[in-house]
Image (cartoon, rainbow, N blue to C red; front, side):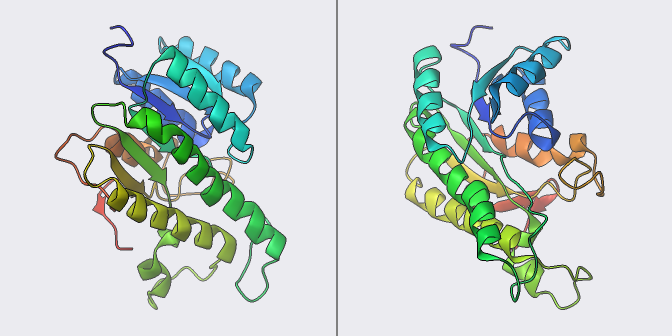
Length: 243
């Protein structure tokens, strides 16, 4: 199948963990995937590994805290493909210095918000003209249950470690989802936030309820939803979540 007839997807933060598995699962479904990498050498290595699985994946340099790389990536996609059908904003970090609202350092707040919210918003802005050229663009923002006011306000919630920087960044990302979906309500572009759950990755130190294969399910599902699918929502692999 030529690229003219394939869906074109960009997944950021895709050299490991959920991002890499999202690339793999989309490619298996016939999508032409651009593997977004902060370090292009790592991106080329991961793309080569996927090639041994029979998956055609192209690496592309996207470092969400270096906004000029998003500009350059958009120009490259426009030149090579002419449009973008799917954007998965997967890039994100957890800071080991993140802690409670009463004590978290302002520099930690800035670092986490810059990557998890501002960087992903800038990438979305730069890719939006290409998504508008799609017959049905899809934007998936990889969020978390800790970005839910409902989850954090549930007094029966057994989780006691409520770190501010990561939670605030995911709340902000969810707000971007809501407002962008409203802004694009008269287009065919659909924007949704997803929660992969606690996944066993390097970022979680190998702890979590879900494998990376399970963790990528929601991203892949909402990247591939049809025109009847939702927009402006918050979901995990089992369905809708409360904000």
